[in-house]
Length: 64
Image (cartoon, rainbow, N blue to C red):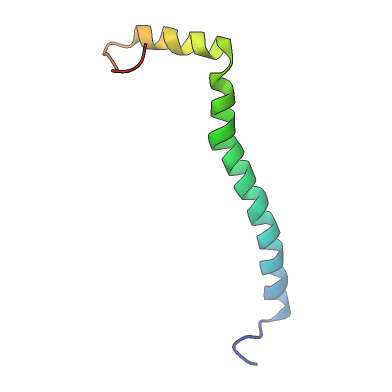
């Protein structure tokens, strides 16, 4: 068997993981970037964050 040839089972696994990898990447971006940005636009979440900032025992510069 040459170095470029791979067993048939391994080729199938790589093909499937390439498709699944794109799906996992999209889900990661959605959960870690798009969802938090969308939540920050909701007025109830904004009010909760302001209330949380007012209850902190220390001051965070640039917030509030």
